[in-house]
Image (cartoon, rainbow, N blue to C red; front, side):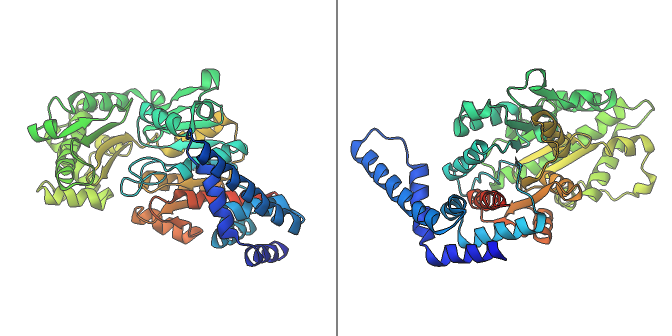
Length: 416
């Protein structure tokens, strides 16, 4: 109980709230060419150092407790200590989704907040590798990570990008291992199906889909995005239509690639029935669009069953309709990234909001390889998992607060 007693003393005897305000001001003060502003920053830095000095003098592990107080609220610090008591391990890698996790279209102007970026920089400076794990294209992710964290961090050799939900892994600074194209390891049948779907995704699309959507610039996944504001009613309508069309494309592509004679229209019907059964959201879209057809999946032709078991169809309401490989998901990408980074015994903080992130969370739990956290607007399945494990749920746009808890956890782990 000694560490708990020390934490009680820390937050009872010191004005930690003001200390954190000074720390945040010093950390996030914008670079300005103003003598008055710089003097103000210098005064704040001196006051911060003085307040930390009081804590250093009051505790034997003074530096550690000063860092905890400057980065975590009372609740965050005790959560950190509870986690440490449960797992007896520090976080040694971050595995982070981006959209609606690190950043939120509703709360952060679709940019990663500066306090979150600073937290990531602190983990990097403390030798904790970062795995950015996203469904976005590599070029998009590289761009905003370099803009946010800086080229030095991105190219340090301690940051890896799992892109397109696991189809590729990019880890600058690792020679021949810098870029792993995991989709190249798929067999010819699956690659033929995806090539066919991609080639016809817009050229054969109904007029409203052709004019209302664009094909995201993926290397392998086939993702239709709306030409309207994400989340808007018009985006919802066009993505619902696009999902129906993608199921049509997938059914016909599988029929064409099959070695045996398969009727394309029949394959489309089976595709709709199969994925509707697998995902209630997809079934709901098909029912609203008048395209749902109930079928006995026990009678599903084996060639179609084998193909559909290897291909995922994902629906993101008012955001995207996507076809991806189930053999290549975020878990496969994370495992490849950890291999390149040399993290042999991971204990990760996994942060995400969607069903693709849930696979990584479950992988971490099953392998005793980490803990999971999610924003409060995450999908119901993700929230159910997070609440059933360590209850690490944070407010929309407030990923920095959860990272603060993890930072405090690592500080406290250094006391052992």
